[in-house]
Amino acid sequence: MRLQLFAAMLLCSAQCLAQKAASPDFESYIAPYVTSNNFSGSVLIEKGGNIVFQRSYGFADRESHVPNSSKTRFHVASVSMQFTAAAILRLIDQGSLKLDTHVSEVVPRVSGGEKITIRDLLLQRSGLTDINGLPEYNEILAHHQTPTTLVAKIKDKPLMFEPGSKYLHEEHSAYNLLALILENKTGLPFAAAMRELVFHPTGLSQAFIDEDTISSAHDIADGYQPKGVSELEPAASIHWSAKAGNASAVISAADSARLVRALFHSSFLKDPSRKAILETEPRVGYGWMRAQSDRFLQTTYYMNGRAPGFSSFVMYLPKDDLSVVVFSNIYSSATTTIGNDLAAISLGLPFTPFTHSGTVSADTIQHSAGTFHFGPDFYQANANVSLTNDHRELFLRWPSGEQSPLIPTSPDQFIDRAYWEDVRIERDPAGTPSVLRYGRFQGRRIAAKDDSK
Image (cartoon, rainbow, N blue to C red):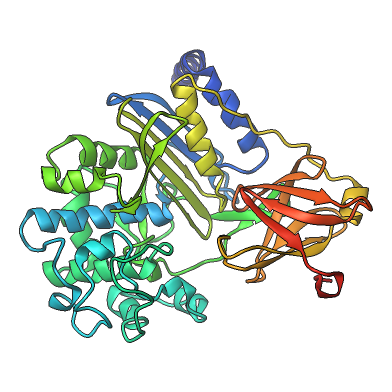
């Protein structure tokens, strides 16, 4: 037994040393995210069909000290839409649907269904009321749902705009409706339809749709969320069935990379369906975002996702045949920054490592408070965002009441730990915060009488 254990340790050491020797930049880049409790999960980089780097970090179950591994499966939030879209495209390839099929032909009694096409749903340009924005959405998450019950929540509400005319935001309702369309066209429950159309044909034997029926398993990660600037706590429990079609897939990083190859390289989809994904306009559709990148000098295909306890990022660069997958069981958008930077490291391009000072001076905390008004183009239109503190750490309080801890990177410069966005405080001559910069957006301080206390 001792000899077997010693041999296994030698093998692991040799593999780890070889991996470090081959890709020291990957390891040194990721390390600060891991040690600061801002990343825990799996990373996979594949180039030309060959794995360049694969590594897992942190714990799938922190309480029982079960580590994440290459076999760990994660809830991947909005990346799930890639799978739902692929299933719909498979039905189109089989002749069961067309992109121009109207919703009313498949699911009756949906408001505007005679105008909304399958294409509109896939491109998130349907005009349907978004279920995630309903006042009762937290109550919806607290109970088991089906595609039918989810669509019932919004089917009688008037359209927000003419289908196909614009893109406002991620249409979760559109992908709930696509899940119901899959059920109606196949005669199978959504999860079974996904197995039949996507998971089995692409060899993703361990991927599945969470319909609230899974039991605890060591290879399925538990979700966590930031607690203050540096700690973690278990994420709130939800019914993942309430995210059918838009965020209920559970997969490993290797599964995700296999889907990328199936979508872009194999005969899994017919050429017209693959071409639809590859089209650069509109920017959002088929579970992907598409953009001409100045950083990578090519069209990039990517998707990120966040849901309680988890965040995810998938990117494909066709010119270099490079795939990057970053899955985390921490509710933080750091995965997007990590994924983009890992792609840059892979291609020998510049990147900025993550550093943090760890503390905010007592003086900064004492003189950092106020409410700031952002414009109509902000993530939440015309939002008032407050800068608050608990005498030890700084936070942003959003209109919903959610608070984002701010990680200090230098005096008056921070990172929003939840959304992983740069935050900067600008002060007037008296040292009072006058402007709050959030990424590319600017919020101006509201008069003191309106400030959050």
